[in-house]
Image 1 (cartoon, rainbow over the protein chains, first blue to last red):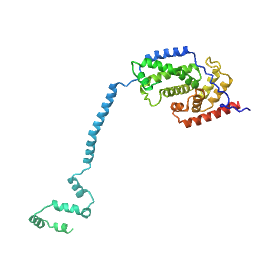
Image 2: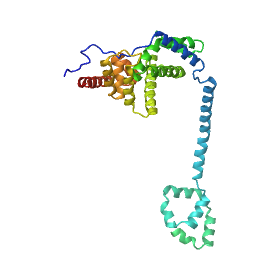
Image 3: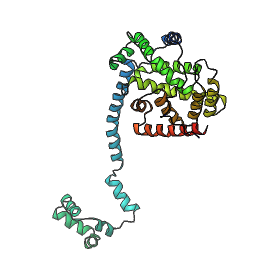
Length: 138
Length: 180
């Protein structure tokens, strides 16, 4: 059997003939007529500008709302002192010893600086309240 | 095209568009006819696909960004149109794409726009046994004598991969023609 080699034999043409020039002239005419009824899709300047304005507005809205949302989230996590006191006094299992252990040096010094009492007042308190002696010892 | 950028501007400008598009038609209708005909084989089908190709080119001119050459952009549209035309036709007839191509080759001998002999019919039959991409590469290289760089731009495949594809296609066709 003779081996067939595309490179060694003369090139085989496809055999597909192009039609005569008349066909292409008519083709052009028909096509231009068809296209004449159509307009190429163009994006108008107004639509382009409208899109840009919308984008800028969206950025502004985001810029204004994000800090508000962050602030709101931060506030919602804060608990006022009264609520905390009530919780510790009536709801939680935290006792005095736990509280004392939770305080560090800084907290104690803060307490000292916040509570400024006259000597007379302290004496009066000690006289009127017998239980205070126990609290101090603790 | 001497200055493609300028020519594209003329195509986009409503004042010069008509004349520029006529020039585009004059320049590309024959090579694109030839390219599409090699894919779909039948003259009437080629006529339909060629028309759809130019309409698509016209409608999408404003999307052409000039990243590739106008020539390769148009060839890419023509290739896609021809392939989707064949797939659609096969689906409508309820047959496979291979059977459709085989039928088209059967009809070639009675086609007024075909002047081939038995060897050419055998070559076309051998081509239909190749995968779609190899068929495209072989036809573009062997029949249309396009450069690998041009085919690469049209099909979006690297030159190396195209060379390998063409090499495999030639081997398979030679083997097919030897056994027949």
